[in-house]
Length: 76
Image 1 (cartoon, rainbow, N blue to C red):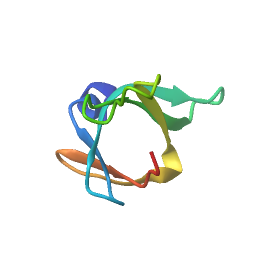
Image 2: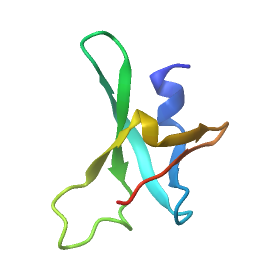
Image 3: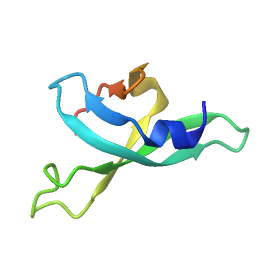
């Protein structure tokens, strides 16, 4: 699977069913393994109290990569 294919998918939190956002980047370790995803939060989740508009999802938080969505367990 290519990064461009991942970027087309919505990232959804399985804990509450809400869309977190979309992938804007990936985190790769020095040995070439993918460690996680950088997600740009949807405008709905960005509050006036938050200065971060992106979050990191670690690879072990990913539950399922489907045809249209990526399901993750996140507390954000």
